[in-house]
Image (cartoon, rainbow, N blue to C red):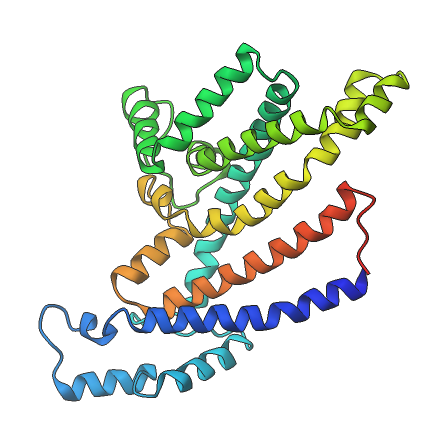
Length: 307
């Protein structure tokens, strides 16, 4: 196991470098960030040159990237064009988005897997048909429509929640935004669990467990569910990074100042340091989540061994 982890960590290095290089190149061709600092009027040549020297934009792209990567390994993600350190923005944005992601993942695990098990065991029955239709509707409706409808009904019309989340963004305030963020993924988890349960229900090891006289709940939880969770865990593991990076719409609707909000502001203002810094951390989140998912396979299926 230890050798496998070391090998995977070494494999992450070229993936991390390639991903950040691609992001750096894409962000730096968005436009001229200096032009946005001068407002509607164009910067005079002297001021533009001074600003480029100050932020290191007068150097070739490859040199800018090497300087950036060298600073990243020391914990310095650069300075935004407003003079604020990107690490300061991260210290306020990431805790909020992490809490929002935790709420969304809990919805996926609790509701998605539960509905998937129930419908997988009752395939073809009315409850199965109803859940399939419901998940199809959730997948078909865009997230911004779901978020706006829930905000209008629960927040404005009925007054059950605050229409906007406070700056502290406590867990209690993130229940509805977390449900909105997880809605599409929850539907996929339900369908994925249902399919996996229905397929494994006819397996030999399940019939053997039933023939041995084991209680039904033990057969379902100990044997059937455990072996059916591998594709579900794969999806949820990769979805962690996607939820953190894709929370722009949800955070805009509920006025949550998290990672999505900062990325939106960075793109809108062509603040390359902010965008590259936040996406760099999200790349690391993706890589670590995929490693943890691979290690979890061995826990779910004892036949999987890593050398």
